[in-house]
Image 1 (cartoon, one colour):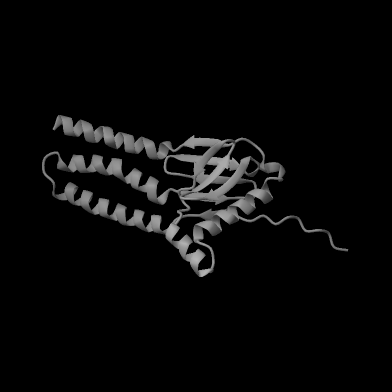
Image 2 (cartoon, rainbow, N blue to C red):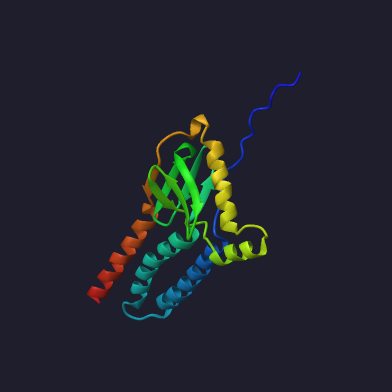
Length: 186
C-alpha cells in the first residue's frame, strides 16, 4: 500500500530582464571608468565631486537596472521595483496583466512589474506569425496561473505589504547632498 506523497515544494520562480541587467552592468562600468578617471587625474575638488557623484548615481543605476525582479513562490508574489518591494499573498492578487506594461492588480491598487518589460514589437510579431507568445505575455500568463492556483492555499492569505527601499534611497540621497554641498563650498 502506498501513501500519497506530500505536495512537492519548489524554489521561487525568478523573473528578471536580461537586457536591464546587461545595461546596468555597462552603465556601472562606464560610471566607474569615468568616475575613477576623475578621482585619479582630477585636481582641486574634482575627485571629491566625482566620488559624491558616484555615490549618488551608482545606487540609482542599480535600482533601475539590476534591482528589479519578480519572485513567485507557492504562497506569495514578491515584486522588487526600483524604490519599493511589494509582497502580495496570492489570495490578494486580483489579476496579472500586460498592456503597455506588466502589472499586478491587488486590493484596488495597481503595481508595476519593472522586471517584466513588455515589447509591443514582439507581441505584434507573435500575432502576425501565429508563433509563440511574446516573452512578457508568457510570463504574465504563468503568473496569472500561479495566482489562481495559489489563492486557495491557507498560507497564501494576508494583506499586501509595501516597503520602501531605503538601501537605495539613503546612499543616493547622501550622495546628492554631498554633491550639492561640495558644489556650493567650491
